[in-house]
Picture 1 (tube, rainbow, N blue to C red):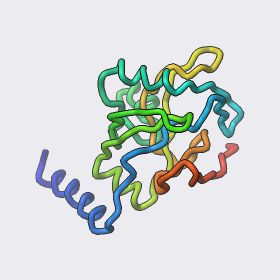
Picture 2 (picture 1 turned 120 degrees about the horizontal axis):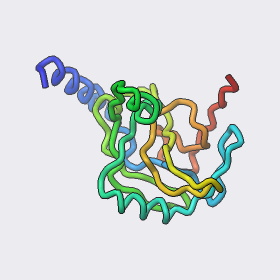
Picture 3 (picture 1 turned 30 degrees about the vertical axis):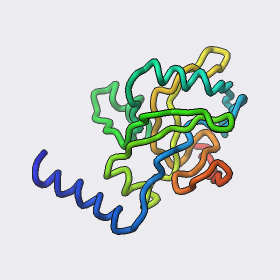
Length: 165
């Protein structure tokens, strides 16, 4: 790590600390099921314990990236840095929540509300049963109705409009 890089990282951490705010340690990864419907009409079935068990079998953290970079950029050889790492998942009231270790850059972006939502990346059967979480992306237009990162409980959902582009 160069001195310039280290300075930038410490500066971002200092900004976050100076504001007296931190991003949430626990985040909603899937809303309560069993039926989950995206704003664009896609449907899936969530059995939280399947996702929790698959995470345990993975035996390692899952990346949260920016705008699903791991799925779209990384396969093309384009850098898709992590914004954080999902280190634990659990079922909460029919949904799935994850404990996250955020990077300093992502922490600052969340605190500044540059990114407000997470969008899960997951595998599912042809019938729509969610099998496992692959990671998540920091986004501003989630397909699912999700708890905003600036909120602390599932009851405090925000519903941004979905683009029809």
